[in-house]
Length: 385
Ligand SMILES: [Fe+2]
Image (cartoon, rainbow, N blue to C red; front, side, top):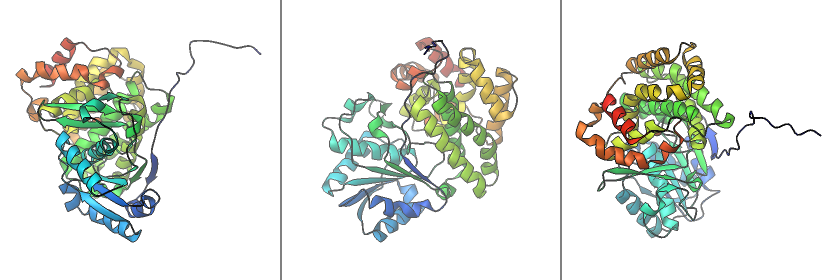
């Protein structure tokens, strides 16, 4: 036998994912699946908007039909804070729960992930910051995402805001990957048009960043490419007609694909910079992503030209290069009303220096295809203002 070695071998990579159930009406299956995981009481984590939209009531009914007791913590803020997690942990322990069901967008799901691990680990949440710092798994976590964008229901990430320090803590651990995600596209119909677009652009940013990430691989590339392609087609359709259920379903599928990609290939400088803005100003994460797409493509392009051409081909069926890709993307952003600047998130010139200090520490920066220095980040913020 001849062992042939060359430089074209594939890198060693892992691929982690929750069990996934996808489809219209699948939210009704929560009770059936929760009954395999809970014997005592279920803690439902959500926010006031998701409760008002009626999705929490459907989950409660489903749990009751399966004979499960439940209690609710539904005061999670947009960009969940340390205090939300502490309050949720107290609720979980006081009520003797043994399963968490998170219903909502990225905020309730990230908060639920941290409630789980803070209920089982000693110390403060700050000690879990960074990569693989969590020692003990939390209780089982079942997610019902109600936005097509964050993919927190798939990912090993949780982002918690430290309001006092004006920054976002990024916690990454395979112990944060939920056990089960029940992905029902019908739940996205109660998003308003602003959230529909910003979460959709966040999903696009997940696809683009993970596709060019230094940790990308064939295990993740196909999901990233397909997600970018679907979003390019489906997001304008959803924006035009929010009740186009076929397009809503496509967006939910694309968000799931982008989540599978970034959960395993990680992200890049766009997310590090948008976490920076979101930590200081309470903007939703996708809004900052809209303002950063163009300048980040320009910054990274020389290092991953072939990959951007593959993305351009998948999304727009052209292979013109950087200017063509950017003009297509700007047209897409304008079409869905997302052509904004960071100024619109509240960012001021004098914020750039302190925010850059946080960005330098963000784990998402580690997999950006082009190494970024402090001065690069400051310049990129100035351009996106
Ligand atoms: Fe994101």
